[in-house]
Image (cartoon, rainbow, N blue to C red):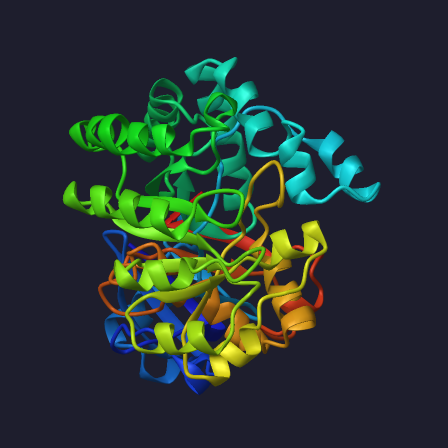
Length: 419
């Protein structure tokens, strides 16, 4: 049991768990001068201090504060922990040389054609042991927890052959067991074409469909299947075939869509009821209509847009169209070597004109939806798992994206336990 009292404001309160949409994304339901009771790792009760039940009031007044069961949150906020629904947290090495290449004017596609980009990461990963991959990924997991993330989706995609894709997914499975984070796993064999299939893409697509997907399904190594649907990578037709095969094994799609052009990734994602379509730098009326009529959530990744110096996704227009938007870090070695969702919030506010409330909803309740855990995470709701952030003494929630290099979190609790 843990009881938080005198909370400056309890933020993200949802009496009934629901996905935020349209103008509602600009609303952060809150309770000022609040209490919050956590029992058995879940949110049990909350409300204004003036309405706190007498038994809890007696406990707060009589308990020994040093026990840790009672937390006086005077001057501080409590909010849902971040849900980061798109990452590539398992990888080997770094790619700062490509960072220099970009500065010198090479495009993402040019770097890829020279054997850089995803193929560079695949080469490094093939030379790295499973144990080393696990240790480095756990270090990154601790890093993002230190920045307020309590749940994360992690993709494969730097293996690009059956053996190494399985290796990555087994690392993720071990992380699920040993990290306090809530983790979802995504198979992304369709991330790039290995060099040996550069002139025969169909052979690699067949390998994904006939070898990788059955192996992964037999071991239960992934909840989702993803594809980089983009010119020069996987076509709509490739993606369609891969998703059709994956769904037969119970893998629900997610899509890397429309990052570098109008690829058709959104439409193929909607066709297969993808849980999310991610990136969306190139998105227009056709994509808006497709998403509006679907259960697929639009997910923006502003950190990658920033790092690659591209045009940002039209998130303001997407929200104004009444479409829910999630936001994730895309933490990876090539296009966003950062897992800070505080920084993503700042980019969304500054470059994409989201309000701080919209940005926070995008990486809490909507992020939870984009990784299929909105029934248990993402909001302050009785019965949900107590993944919560206790802030420092900050003047307002808007301060978080405003002062984007200033640490705002005092403590992170996952399932009610401080981590």
